[in-house]
Picture: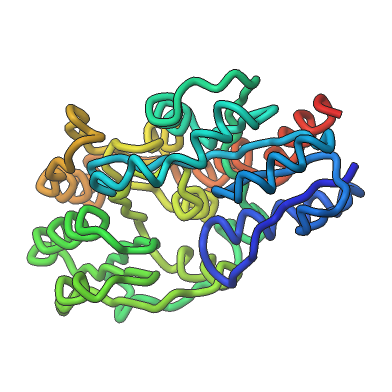
Length: 328
């Protein structure tokens, strides 16, 4: 079997991490890989909005088109331009795909709502992570300035206020009661940088994926405030044994069950039309209860075993291969 994955891999980013790991897994199972759409292949794996003519020509040659979808564009985040940004994904979804893979149930809801119902068979396959690299055991980056300090950590591409401001407001409430530090890892847009200029916040630059595990092991709780379809950062935190405290939006309800973390209720009315305020006061109260042991979460090995069971690279790859084999 030969699979075409026309994607340029960068050093950082969830998509690049997925492709790099996925290709390594496929090659380990004897699957031939190309990134050249003009080469002969059995499967054309579409992750992003590739040129339609490129996909159509492959389909004319008898290549099976597998579309992997994360999320879509919609008004609350992207404004009126979402109508144009979805056009190519929508065309592939409705007319070119022989099989569609959604990253989560939330991803499928979004795609059906904004791309229309696909006529192709479909399945949901959650992202897989390297659970050998991301585990509770191993070297730990020293993030604490003293042994009693509490480290809260979040990783992402911080481009919108809703991704970062609720976390800062949460920690502002906790700062007067506990010795805490909020570690933010990732890129941040210039308009958001003034928000993090606080004594209890450390903003680190983008860190390569193969180094993130040591930072996660050095933290106590992972915080998340995005509406992602299946964020690698959350899965990697769980794999390192970190409990996750997040707002219940995106796919969080699917990824973080009871005991592995706590989800803060979020107003989902008009979710795709406007960004509702996040209840940072409740988030702060929940974290305080966790720190005071009024709320008990699973130990780090139980959390890590959960991630290994449901989100390993091996499981993900086997699920993809089962679909690929069914098409050829």
